[in-house]
Length: 340
Image 1 (cartoon, one colour):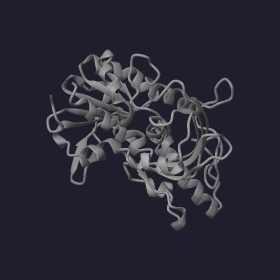
Image 2: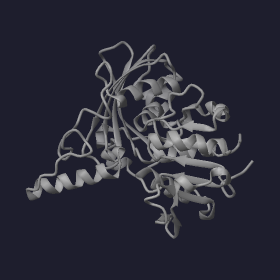
Image 3: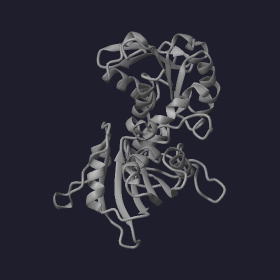
Image 4: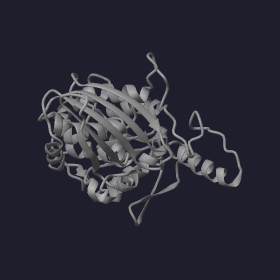
């Protein structure tokens, strides 16, 4: 069994938001720079990129990269590129942990949040690929799992408030330029979203599907059922908001039996990876600014829903680039170390 000091890791899509977060988190967790390869498109090849506070790595071209010398590859280059290169890396003996949506619903590929279903990793060798779930799904199932274990969940109604970083660096730049434009009289038309995002909210993330739900809303349904329980009914409305980092969720949860708000707080506080910030008397509740840069999922506004026999409402915040993407993938890799 190898450990973090001697495993070789490739970060694919290293120059993107999630790729840079991969590198930052690996450095924070003590992975030696000499064991890390930064990989991206040929356009980015030979560019320097930071690793931690003091080290620099030279980006290598994906189309020329040999994965046979790597134990793991953390992928976030976009779905089409993962579809082509992840299987190639896997056949070279490298275990791929893919952050795109491409492999998530494949029956023979585990979809994993380590705190919840790390047992699914026993099937990683089917194709040597593990899928990282959607960012909003991750933080939602983190909130649901400790409650579902005690009082079975029947139905979840979720509304999301998702930051522009979920759409990449160009989307973040668009928010900046549109915001500046509103104060300077310069019109900046939308390029990454269907409508202007500055001082606005957009009730569409990803494409519309049959039935008029968006693909992002569909992901939250099917991924929750694959990770947690196929019997849980989920309905979602996903909204893009003018926030740089951090997704927020409003959850309405219906249970099969009584679960008080106080008991829910206790269960959530005891669950690894969750921080409860919930005291209305001193205005203690989480916002995206509170969650930015944090590893934990933050949960607030836990209260009874009086409109159903057994229901709770709550507010859930997480850094979508860390726990919603890069950190979860690194945690998957670390969960594989003892079994590979």
